[in-house]
Image (cartoon, rainbow, N blue to C red):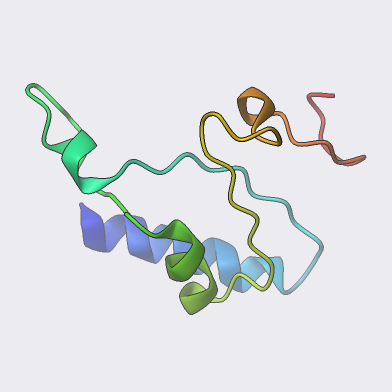
Length: 82
């Protein structure tokens, strides 16, 4: 549910204060969750506004088609997928 997803994100943000953490997340917008047979209930049309309000101190947003999106593989030395 939306409230459970918000609780999970808040819990992650709280733990990020303890150690450097990089969170990779994929957010769907509201129209995407309303497609037929969608099993998703949580959405955010503005994750770049949502995440700081939950306690994430640095948010970088990339969307499909952006040069830095790179299919979700961020260019970061701590990214285990590089």
